[in-house]
Image (tube, rainbow, N blue to C red; front, side, top):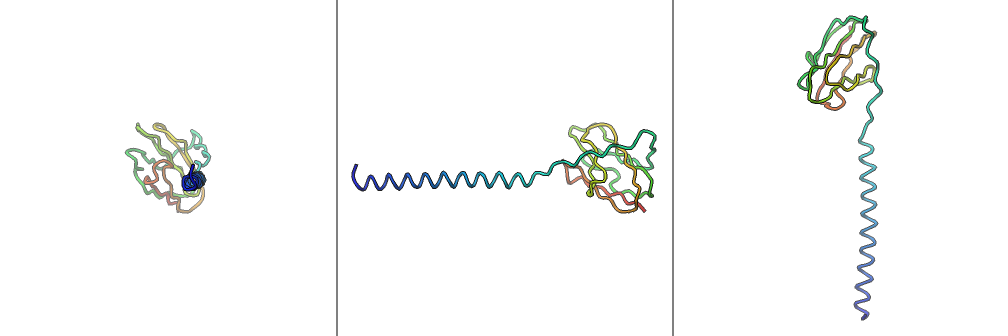
Length: 135
């Protein structure tokens, strides 16, 4: 091997090493960045008991809540009714005070004890938004 061939081989070896190290570093950084984007679903807050009678029913259908905005009084209960979807949905309060299970059919009831405005969405479909105003 000539001196020029040896220099070329050494340069290629260094470049391959540096490229490999950079590739591993970029992959590790990407994995860490993605891990930070994943937010675990908050724990489910159990539905109110069967003896609780809701004053309002909200239908969860076609990736929407109907009605999306509701006003109730303190102590009133709201029931979300999930109707035959091809995808799971839930209701998750912005402040995590109520959190249903993911479901396609069934219902979830929550009693609102305190006055305030409670925004919520679907953890899988954040474009699904609703608001409960308690006054």
